[in-house]
Image 1 (cartoon, rainbow over the protein chains, first blue to last red):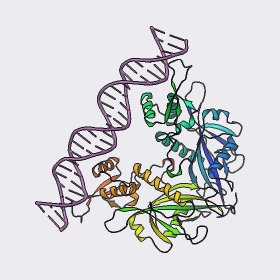
Image 2 (spheres, rainbow over the protein chains, first blue to last red):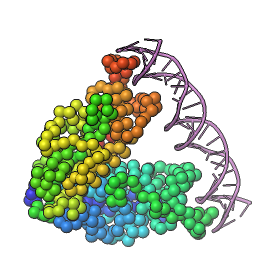
Image 3 (cartoon, protein in one colour):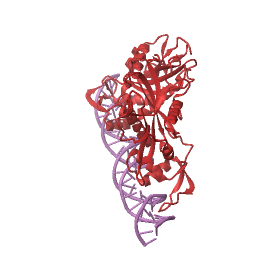
Length: 227
Length: 227
DNA sequence: CCAAAAGTGTTGAATTTACACCCATGA
DNA sequence: TCATGGGTGTAAATTCAACACTTTTGG
């Protein structure tokens, strides 16, 4: 192996929940950056860049993410290493891809300009390289993991109502969930702790606010622990 | 990034089910190779090697596995990319690690010599680099996946009895399973097809032989399909 | 009072688990 | 015939899913 022949890079699929307009239900959105040089110049691509010699892979992912979109992820996990010989036309590039979740407030702050734009995760244009496949795989992982872990909390703030938590699940899984059964499931899992506060201002009975139970891991990654 | 500073390698955790002696229950075993140069000279390590410039990652894993142990895996899947800065003392090495399953017959053929030896997966010596962590993670993935996929078939031959299939599960999960309920679970999953043959020679009622149902994928890897 | 979402209760269905029991073979 | 694992039956326990109903607020 040899640097002239092989490059190691990181890329990140960033997910946020954002509503299109007022009153619309939130949907999964990801930020993409426009390529300013070839190959695939002008096409949209995942944020990323080369790995520095003295930088861990996850640090490289967090850095390139900060540099291109100014986002601070709430959750970051390695997705897969993509390294097929022909995935980049000129040189050989092996990309270690991460996926990240950011809070809605974060996503609003994120710079959106000529070269950074948010897209609906289910309706992407044709992207550079094999990035469509990568996003599809990240989406699949997110949806699979939503069903058996607590990652939904990474989309929410310090306190939240059970309806908000349920809406996260509904937006990601794209299906309605029974509020009564959802409540019991969450309570049985001990993933949340009830606070004494409630959220006022709605035109109905004020819901109780909950807090994430820090003694329960977001996900079980076995011996790797929190990545 | 630069070749003098960063090396890309592949390693593989290979699992086989082998009985210690006659009549003993089979247990999970993995082959390791002895390092013949520094760092960690003399220590046992996972088989692997550098990625060739014009070779896919999975091909590199299969090749290095063939070259060091002469094994042909029945199942091969990417595990994780390990790339912490300090995981190798001298140079920076990023390893894309795969895990593989081989049949018992294969494992018997496998060369065992001065520099290749099979170890019980749960009682390993102190290995080179971060390879103990890697094996622990691979074990965790194998055990997790055994519960919701059909990878157990990768340990077995063309035809097998349900008792043999159950013993694979029991050996990997290290717990006894109810034969009656196991049978119903497997039959409900449509993962196997009954043949007309039965296995004679036992000192009891001859069990029916089954065949793996090829129309059911071994595992669901979403958009990645079979790796 | 009414509408709307919060929150509780209840019931039947589906799934899991434990274990009793019959079957077919070799010795 | 007996021991042994193959294979079937069944009932209790647990979990899941659907939905009725009560509560609490704003208007």
